[in-house]
Image 1 (tube, one colour):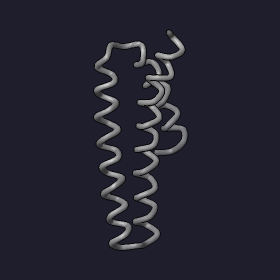
Image 2 (cartoon, rainbow, N blue to C red):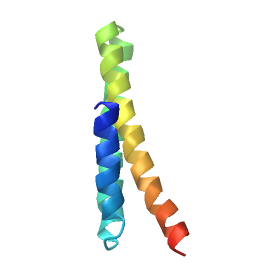
Image 3 (cartoon, helix red, strand yellow):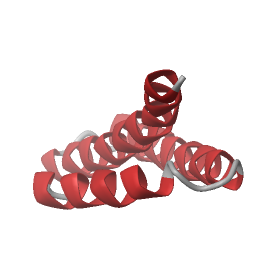
Length: 82
């Protein structure tokens, strides 16, 4: 996922933060799945340390980080609204 794609995802998620509580559940699920994939990619990189496997791991971890940021932004928005 490129930086522009991450920005697009964050903007879309930003619009969703005005939605009901199900958004939290969905983002939590996405974050857990993304982190799981990052962990699998890390294990693959450790087992077969190549440039390609490292790039796959870093991309997966970047997606997991973006998902975590999106989840955290729900709380940032809630704090600003309060």
